[in-house]
Amino acid sequence: MRAMIANGVRIDESFAEAFPMRGTAIIITAPNLKWARQAAVTMTGFATSVIGCKVEAGLDRDVPESETPDGRPGVRVLMFSMSTDMLQTQLVTRAGQCVLTSPGSACFNDLDAPDRMPIGDQLRYFGDGWQISKKFLGRHFWRVPVMDGEFLCEATVGLTKKAVGGGNLLIMGANFATTMNACEHAIEAMNAVDGAIMPFPGGVVRSGSKVGSKYAGVPASTNDAYCPTLRGIAKSALEEDIGCVLEIVIDGLDEKAVAEAMRAGLAAIVKLGPKDGALRVGAGNYGGKLGPFHFHLKDLLP
Image (tube, rainbow, N blue to C red; front, side, top):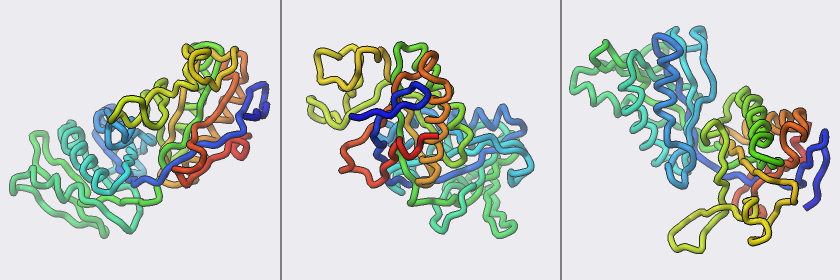
């Protein structure tokens, strides 16, 4: 595999291969940003990969009072899954267990899309007949009585079938400290891109995987070609100067959001340079045979 050089960082002439997903966006508000974030963080827990979690979710951005339906501070949450049914199930379950339960919370749609999924239309039943339907400015809400007052929730949320999941960067460095430093710089830049999330812990995953396993029933297993400890034992994709590999996975409401997030992350890594950051950046793909979205690193370089 040929490599390009940008500010001393080797950039693989490769591409990230991504897949179609279903996606939605909601705004969670609360009396203050602390509790809006708490509800959002709780709702997006255990939502790193559809392989094990059935949904991928994360915090997109903080939303100021001037931009929320109820004039309170909020957090925008994005959720993605491989099917509409699974996304709807996870959305309602997580909102019911994590947002409805959170003190002072409210939940609103934040995706303008022709397709819709129920949220308040299902959570209203918690009101046990005391819930109240309310329509305002063309939007439908449910007011559900709870012990601190009312839980206000939009009846339905927008659904996009043009979401993209699985954009990625493979960040390779001399050791853990410098590789992690490159990742943190990349994540900071990528978090500024609207409509995209990095669903793994802090945006970073160390257990990058390949499809399949030698064990029956295991859909994904360790990416041995990128494990430094297996160099010399397994067929390795790593040079001798690479001592650590970390991955950033990106989901977006559309193809552009994924591309922009990857572009921002790559620019931050290149700017940092190899001394304190990454020696090499690559991307994971399956030869272009499985996913229709191909994000070529050469096209994303600053």
